[in-house]
Length: 310
Image (cartoon, rainbow, N blue to C red):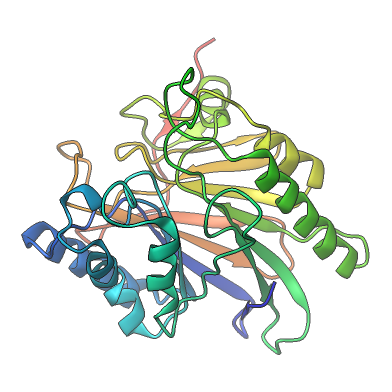
């Protein structure tokens, strides 16, 4: 817990989530992605930028390290603190997760951390958000490496958040709760691959936004959602991975949110514009506001409602 950020004097803290850039070698589609990131930053003036995985498509990158630098360049130039979690496509070719973390840490405005070496993944860390005077911690932001593909020959599909990562999260949550006189802090969690509960919330609860493809979650439910319920701190989770889903819904008091795919160098759907999700914490509230900022400048505050089928 070495790093912290601060609420503004007006009591707000705003995050811009960019996801699935799939940056390659600076081609025309990458230039469009970079321009979109810059426009959103200029328009929304966030206090933190978060990239939720598949920042690059390493299989097609001549130099994945340089591609990653180029992908985050707009955020770095802005002077705004930024962080990234890794996805399944970031380290498929020519680069490791450890090496991409070192690339992140080259940047002066990056607030990512490599995290503990004795747990799964690279980039498991928590950032405290303090009051404007930098004295009292008011909220927490958890970042988790959701991995890439299953390591078990008998299990096909995507990786899941591992038991030791969940134990680490519980430990951090308990520590922050103890520091806050036994009251859990409102928290957000960021990772790339959606939890299995993203499927459940769409089927059982009122959701807002679009589901244009199946939820590509892991085949194993390792219990991360249950741990968040037990810790009573996380009020919202944010992922990417499924490029043409952008919905959110509340399950057992936690809002499960997709970002809006940002990158042009990957699949999409006609009429489903690239963009970003914005998240705003308000001091003293155990909740958040969220909206989409699309590439044509449209701001979506009231997304389409989806009612579960009876």
